[in-house]
Length: 125
Image (cartoon, rainbow, N blue to C red; front, side):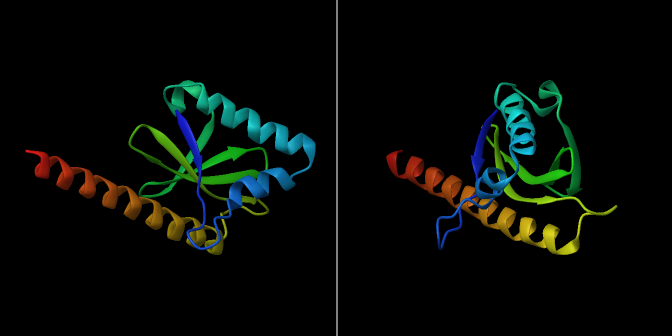
């Protein structure tokens, strides 16, 4: 499965990559190892990673106390949206809201690209 980091349309920053790079080496290695497992597999179940559905297409990858929100789009491609360190029983609402907004942006981009592709195929016909 292909992995892509969400990039802010304004700044171009890849927040999840920045978060992972700022982790202590042990935690960073754990997260990157899980992502490599996902990348080398055809599906998340094959990768053997621990995930949880948050709502709709928004999912969470669990790596020790680290959490990475993601959405899977066609391809299949996993887009990493937001990451945080779990401190309580439930995911904080603010963390879910950030991930949800980013997911909406990604899904809108995908829909626009698909519409553009369909229109260009019609013009060729």
